[in-house]
Length: 256
Image (cartoon, rainbow, N blue to C red; front, side, top):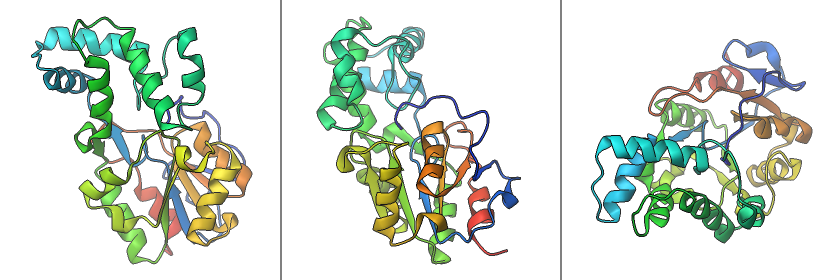
């Protein structure tokens, strides 16, 4: 997260792109920073998101109505999904602060959901609560193997995310917490990507120099780590549950 824009079409200097870019950086990699959404995990299918949130409100939707609602909610703006087509003026301040404060994150996204009249009491809150459950996300198929390989090779890892809620329960549920050395979450550290300070904080928590660190993400905000001195690998986000090309991280980070 947050709220991803399209991946950059060109890479800043020092950025590696895609698996074939093995030679893009010859600096030794002593640590790896990972974005969360679109890199290690993806939100659940929009239709399932709507069906489960409605069920939590005691309402059973048919799939036609669920699909229609999902389309409208994606246009309005979904956390972990597309940016909103329009942010109402009354939500502008919350939207600007959504990744810095928990209340702003919840208020912005429930407010956007409320612009869609679903006729279901408590629906906007139920949609947001779904985001906080581990069932509302799917780690990519190559996330656990990649993190395990890095741990086994002695390469420390941090998760660096623009986000307004705690990701640790998700990693606990997926059995991945022991593979992550630090969680650097924007709402906790008061900085958002692409601000170099958030990447410096992550490097400091792992005890490594930025020049020996690889940032892995899927957006221009992640590529901003170049300004902090890190190398960067930008991967296009894959569909939920599939592999996300994270094997390229091992090509860059581990000795051949």
